[in-house]
Amino acid sequence: MKILVIQQKMIGDVLVSTILCDNLRKKYPNAQIDYMVYQSTVAVLNGNTSIDNLILFEEKHRSNKWELFKLLLSIRKEKYDVVIDAYSKLESWLVVVFSGAKMKISFKKKVIRYIYTDTIERPRISATNYGLIIDERLALLEPLHLNITLDPFPKIYVSTEEQNFAERLFKEHEIDRSKKMVMISIIGSDKNKTYPLEYMSKLVDLIADTGDVNILFNYIPSQINEAKKVFENCKSTTQNKIYFSVLGKNLREFIAIMNKCDLIIGNDGGAINMAKALKKPCYIIFSPFIDKKGWATFEDGINNISIHLSDFKPELFKNKSYKTLINESSSLYQEFTLDLIEPSLTTFLENQLK
Image 1 (tube, rainbow, N blue to C red):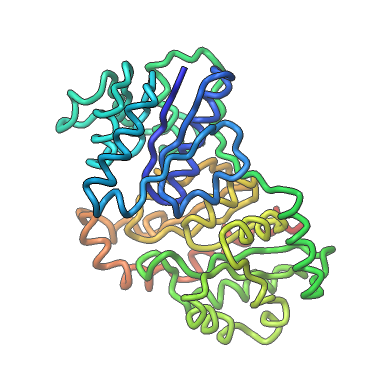
Image 2 (tube, rainbow, N blue to C red):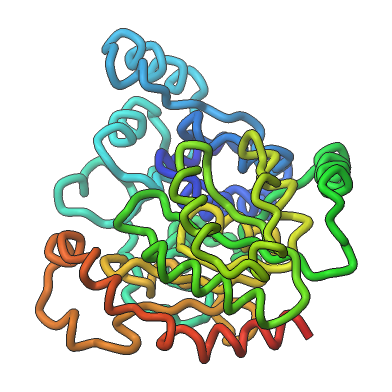
């Protein structure tokens, strides 16, 4: 059997959709299971033996019709039996049509109902604590009637070499490994997904005051000025606990570092999703324009907690469209003061640092 899973999106989506590959491998140990993704997301898939081949949808496939046609032809030649399209946009529709697969599965949409043999209604309410995004992916397996216990947990694999790299890095920076290591995702992927920097500094102070911990900042090189602002606005006693320059040069190095941390706190995004795949306790602050019920995965009130401004001030969101919330995200973030976060964050820290 040959199966193609398609997820052309960002890291969080690609990581979550690996549960399709993992459960298919569990049912069909000898199948060829291929995964179509963007090049930028490949790092989170290293070491995953559920995937036989990565098929990369690259920029050239968007900009050059001949390159796209060659890709489609290569997929046609594979003669897949099953295609599962978790992406379901124009790019993947073309792949599905050209695949010639007997079974083509995706989410139900009016505009593409004739492309697929099986379409699934997206769950509206999660019946578990997995989160809607997990329930949606697992629902795509229903037409296959796998008759197995489904594994809902995305996973990231860290090699021995990568573990040794992280240990060497900590030694170079003279980090006391007897203390708890806290990663803080201080900056989101863009401004609309970033808790105000002045508030973040106070949040870091709160974490530092809770116990004798080591603190690492998660940011990318282009965000260094914002990261410095957060650091400089922290108390001096907090600054002494922050290892500002302990930073991975690439995504795999970040994963290796995160794997050695004990917990992560901060803005929702790829770092949080990777941490969860490493089974690290997570405390997540969602942007005002993000509906957290989709990505608030594995919430248990102890190891995984997420908060949203609407939890405290639902009146600010009444009758407002997604577009309006994006435009108002800056002003809404200002309403998301630390006093709203402190009680649940303190409880989370007490549970994790004791």
